[in-house]
Length: 204
Image 1: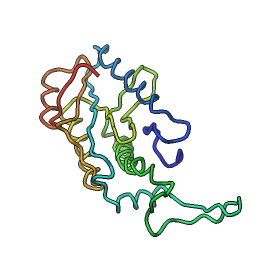
Image 2 (image 1 turned 90 degrees about the vertical axis):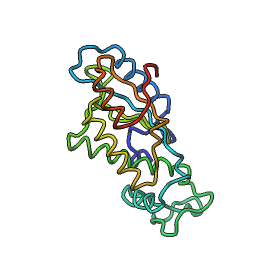
Image 3 (image 1 turned 60 degrees about the horizontal axis):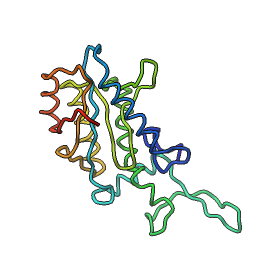
Image 4 (image 1 turned 30 degrees about the vertical axis):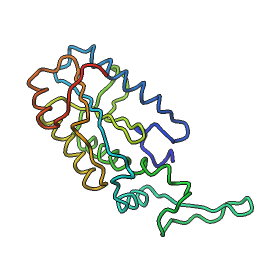
């Protein structure tokens, strides 16, 4: 799974812990509260998503599985048989079942990677020389980072709408929360709030 699932996802993948992403998120949010010299404001949006099994489009899951190259092998008398791809869907007890929401969220990660490649999003850092982070996944929860501008909010909303249209996953913006870097001006906050329609909070 480690070769299929984006590094932004921190659960149920060998060698990764959900606490890793929790620490990264708190470090970035702490930096947001301390910084006062950035020319542009930044934001972190904690998304409230419906559960994967409630709304998922199975055709989307199938296409993602094909794209990442999911395959099976049966162990016969202690030896692994030939590798084959599934063609009749998932059955109860399938060892892949617990990973379905990771596979679904991989669609969102793919959209974020594409936006980053095209220079559409500005990522956040916890330190000057630290890695740039565009989003963090905690199983089916997500936190996204970007510029607190009308353009940044519009790009973020477009990505989420594309993901919703393809996967069936619905983001409840009314229950989502936005955090801003300390120097973000009120005009930018108002523009972001108008587009995303999320509540603001000063405390993570």
